Picture 1: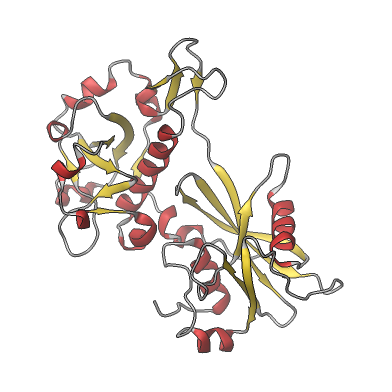
Picture 2: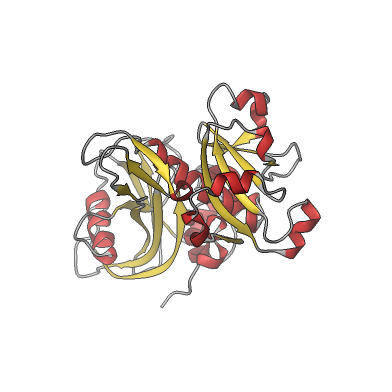
Length: 315
């Protein structure tokens, strides 16, 4: 059994109490806006507001700096006493506010101040990484559920921003996360297969991955996706860790699997999603680093590759 990688994955880190019971208060945001401890994380166009500091860090605003009519989501309370050094002591409520194109530039006209943790999440502290991913994940869900999928009626946020309510029927709609597997496939020589996706530049390579279908186990999804994308048959899928990936709404479930040596093992890119596939030994991968681009340090793909390789690879 492979050891779990979850604790070391950049976007799986978390230092916040989600405080779910507080979401039920009917006048929650009136209370929070009157609380001097409340801090606000601003979101605009799928990005978070950062401080002007050299190293990425979330910018925490006070409620009076945000428009009163914007979408608000209660993220929870801080739990670390040492956050007091940043002006955010333990127990401080944190709210995400999604601003529009009028308010975004007013908060920070310099676009460098707005960033996506997909690229720099590994540089954030535990608290900021968890908050940024929580905020973007739920905000992305709100953006795609302004109307009920059952009735077509408009919906409005409720329960601190954690449900949407059909304005005519009162039916509540809850957030959903799309499960996706990502797998490091090795052969009998312990070589790793990497593929180049049709949407990437031709020299970018990563692990094989895909969404879990309805009525399918995670292990079955591993076997199916690997075969569909590469023509390879794998056995013994073993779970190695998970990481949220809210770009827009996935949970990446990492696996290792081995090639079925009883079956044909020639690489066959599907030609639609995967255009190129290659086997790499550790020496071959090390020798190729000037020619190929690997996944970013923020991704679970990078963590699985480096776990197989045995040490961190150069950026």
